[in-house]
Length: 299
Image 1 (cartoon, rainbow, N blue to C red):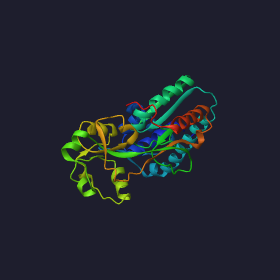
Image 2: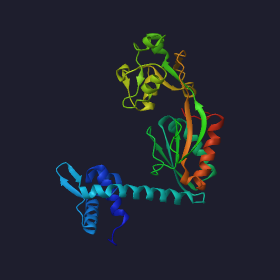
Image 3: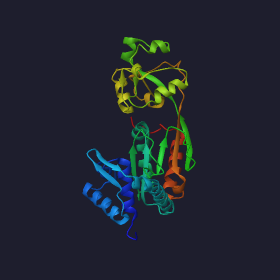
Image 4: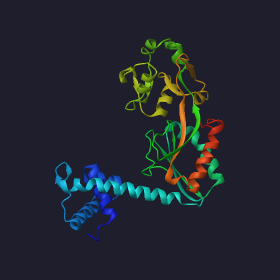
């Protein structure tokens, strides 16, 4: 048992969670033969059969299940160790990984990062564009710009100015089909909505409006695609007011609908908040977006 190491346990956990060797190998970034050898070595050291090979992949054994929770705790401890090591770094050089959604990442963030890099050229920036909230606990990102208030107690969040939303359509669309005058009237129009993402439908329900996925004849979870569809005259989209003003073909419609503004937050894990480059970048982003988030939007 003295030959037991964390790498083998980490790979065991990956296989248990993925349910197959090939999927686990892709997730952890190793070849399948390397992963297979690591699992075999772990089984030799522990003298336990951890997985059964099946035609569908692998199935964890009772012995494997008994070790799974401990392996998960070890993974969480390793992640915390990594965060704390990162949090102790005091040099203004190295990497910072930022997670942001499509709209902010494409239109609002580039000018801010260009200015930051001019002031701190030794800091390397990695940007993850995703509408899914990255896990700061698992170090998928060091800093996240989010459209909702984080609820996890281990996150440090600072609020930025809210972002106003409105409904927009191409002038030609409005001339041809008119402007919806009520919610029932809106159901006869082409509303551009989300495909798998339920945020819009859930948000409408909170405002007292009931919609189903079928009420959106055009659906995509790609927010930039939604905007470009509206700019092409395909239908009505809900988007950022201070971005839409840059596209003269779009007309602000349905002002009778009280769309709530998006909350805007910059967030990091508490274990890394003392890291100098993360702290400096968070302070910079707070200052940059405090005055006017769209002041140098790239449209």
